[in-house]
Each structure stands twice: as C-alpha cells, then as structure tokens.
Image (spheres, rainbow, N blue to C red):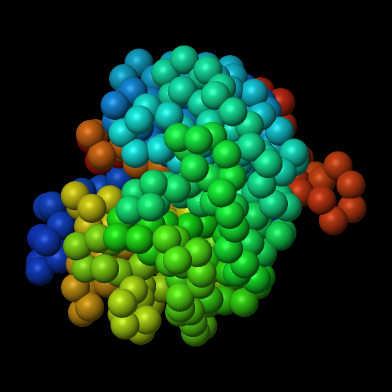
Length: 340
C-alpha cells in the first residue's frame, strides 16, 4: 500500500456506453447493487476464482474468502501477515499469497484453506503472478526491487530477477513474459521468466506513480493506472502508447473485463469507479464515472455475472504522523457493482 487518498468531492455519473463502434454491449449503466459486510481491517489486492465461485481478498490478517453466489464471507480462510498480493496457480486449485510483513509467500488450497508451504521471499512482497509457460510463480518484492521465483510443485524458491525501483502490480501474457509497474520510475519492466532477466522497458510518459496493471490478450495491450489520475494504454510488443484518458486519482487496480471490453479504475482519492472503453485506438474513452466511496482502490471482476467487487471502509485519521488512515471498526464492506 501507499499514500492513497485525501478527502475531496465525489464525482457524478457520466453518460453510459452507447452502441456506436465500440463493440460494447448496448448502454450498460453500472451501479452499486449490494454491500456485503466483512471483518475489520485493511486490505490490498483481490481476485475471483470461477471454479470455486469465490472472491479472495488480501487482508492485513490473512485471506478472506467470499461465496459469490450467496454473498457470504469467511472471517479468515488463511492466516497471514499483512497480505498484499494473491494469485491462482493455473487450474490446480491452489493459490499463492504474499505476506508483506513477514517477507514470505504462502501456497494454499482455495477450497479448504490448507497451507502447503510458506516460502521465504525478498523484502516486502506485494504483487504475485503465475507464469504458465515456465510454470513458475513470480512474487514481486515491492521494497526490495526484485522478484522471487517459486516452483509451486516443489514448494520452494528457485531463483530471482533483479529489476530495481518500487514494484507494483504485475500481469503475465501467457507466452513467457511478465510485466510489472515500477512505481517510482514511471515505467513498465518486461521480464522473460524462463531466461530469468529483464528483457525490456516501456516508459509511461505523463504517468506519475503507475500502480494497477491489466493485460488485453486480444490486442496485446497493457493498461496502466497512474496515481496522478491518468490511465495509459500501451502496445506491449511495440512499447508505444495507444491511448490515454483521465480517471480518478490514487487508484491501485486496473480491472479488465474482456467480455465488455472495458477497464474499471477504482479511485481512492475521490471515491469513484471510472469505466473506460478499450476497443479501438480511436475509441479509448471514459464512458461512466460511478460514485463509490473514498478509499476504495482495488477490486476484482466476476466474469460469470459481470459484477465488480470493491473492498471499502470508512476511515479515521492515521494512528501516527505520516501513516495511513485507519479503517473504522464495523465499516468494512464489499461494494458489488453491476449493470442489472
């Protein structure tokens, strides 16, 4: 996590998506459909697993699981120490989470929460991604500036890749490459996991503090959200910008919906969810800006229903000078956003 919001005005809804040439379904208007309460505490990344029909949320105390079909949340599926990132390991039914406080990663069963191993990583692990071509899990050590490579079959670390900078979210292209935002250097680092090296750099001009990152496999495009309220779309192969739009400030996620061809950008600073159509170079644009809640910054998509789940809370002042705002007891909830 990082400094992520200041109190300000909420943004009202803009016109919805039209049929036009966007290739997006007719006139979806997103709204908050439901609020699912959960245990107190802060959070970071979240993912949806279709096989278990569960949402997994990285929390300060561990992994929280939510039954998507019944809107029921567990308190703690897996205990952890300031959990930041979480990723599924292919179709194995196993997952890996990053413990930012204890510099470790935990591999666990997604249904039972059984822990198979806890593996040492680098300093302050954050984002996690499974790279299917090599079969390795890549854990990005936010403050260490490197990535730890884990063999999930052998349950052990098998190497590392030096990257440099402050590392944020990462995505894989399913062909051997992994992309990671380098927050303090305003760039995307390209990793060849099998070769265990950085194979390229994509500069994000006009982007300050890139955080969330998504991958559009159809076009081979990357979508990066920036702390200064800009979202950049770049051609992953050419390393060139395709489009740029203004979204809310201090996001921490880029939530890609390939069925609607839209990116959801949750903004902590003003409490908004910006919906961006990403289809053609000439039609990358904001189509809706939904009022959510100040501090709401990450989330995940359930492709089966098209709903987006956004962890949220009310906040009090930091518990020490320069610290993060503290979630108020009894206010944590999941905002369920959809179009019906």
